[in-house]
Image (cartoon, rainbow, N blue to C red; front, side, top):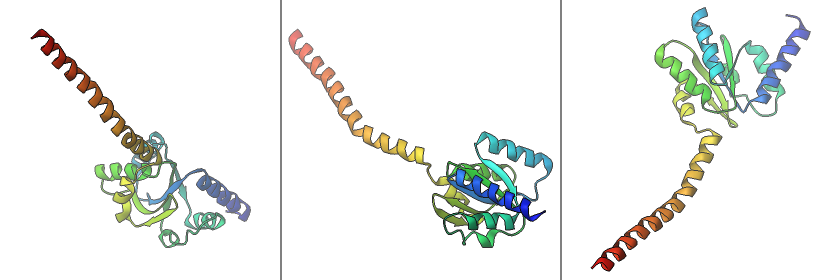
Length: 172
């Protein structure tokens, strides 16, 4: 590959990484054509962008970005695929569901989620349990609505009880 072509690929990888809030570095080298097609289809459905990248080009793209990605560099060995998403736990859930069906690949090498770096396949469970921004907002709204719902519920049920008591007394 020519130097100009490499610089274009590095720029493309860097631009892709800037588009998304998180990315996962995975190993998908042992997948056959059928499993690779199934993985790409599952990624498309989950709104996860899957790219096969050369480690040296990915490293140079990371070096060109703002931030310290030095913890990721030791994981850039063998073949690597990049899974990019705007939802922090989407790639982890996708990998977990695929590994549950077939225990071989993809294997998590490292992940960058919400400015935190996770290294190793043992972090997959942690990453799958991370709540997305929308899930956290929904939890906060539910917690804020809960006391108001309880008050309204108590007032409406109390009103019917009071009405029932008054009606019983008036009938006597």
